[in-house]
Amino acid sequence: QVLLVQSGAEVKKPGASVTVSCKASGYTFTSYEINWVRQASGQGLEWMGWMNPYTGNTGYAQKFQGRVTITRNTSESTVYMELSGLRSDDTAVYYCARGPEVLFLKGPLDVWGQGTTITVSS
Amino acid sequence: EIVLTQSPATLSLSPGQRATLSCGAGQTVRSNCLAWYQQKPGLAPRLLIYDASNRATGIPGRFSGSGSGTDFTLTISRLEPEDFAVYYCHQYGTSPLTFGGGTKVEIK
Image (cartoon, rainbow over all chains, first blue to last red; front, side):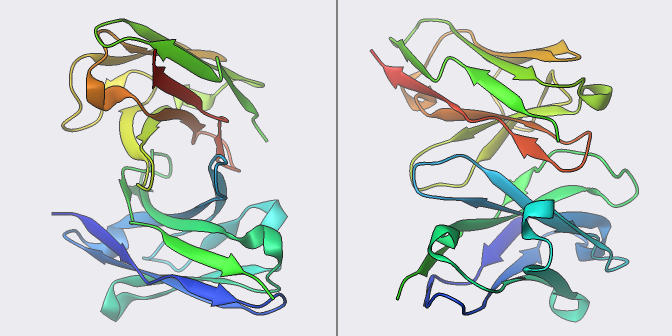
């Protein structure tokens, strides 16, 4: 069974950083991209960036450039998303989602983590 | 970036009725790289349709997708009680990936 399991909810102060983890199981970790998507309460879905776990290559949405960093630990089959300079409008549920096979480059997000709630409040 | 506009914002229907959801793109979606997701409160999105018209694994046959270029449609042939949810379209053909604003299908 393909699963993505994310770390738990966090509360952070403005200006702080947060790291969310996403542990993959049930498939070959390095064979599929991992993407990050967030959703503010009652709002739509917003794509943040992606990683190729095989090469370590990443790409980020322009809105988050300079504030988001995606890394991985292949021995732990885990991808991490760090968001820095937190603001109140970063309060949202953050999802990791499996993207296409790394050789295909394009594909839907077919498996999603359960989501991690990040609350930014003073 | 490719802006996706979904309509209507809310669809009020009864179980057994047909639902037709639209997704319009501001530019041509490359290779019809268009997906539809269903999301229920408190849960992650669930992939329904990919490449505009292919059902994902385990998705019932009452869900179908169509369209190409800039105009796409998700059809639910006969609504079941569990189908009342929010639906999002998503293009993955061009970076940055983008999502539509969603259509809520609610019980009339």
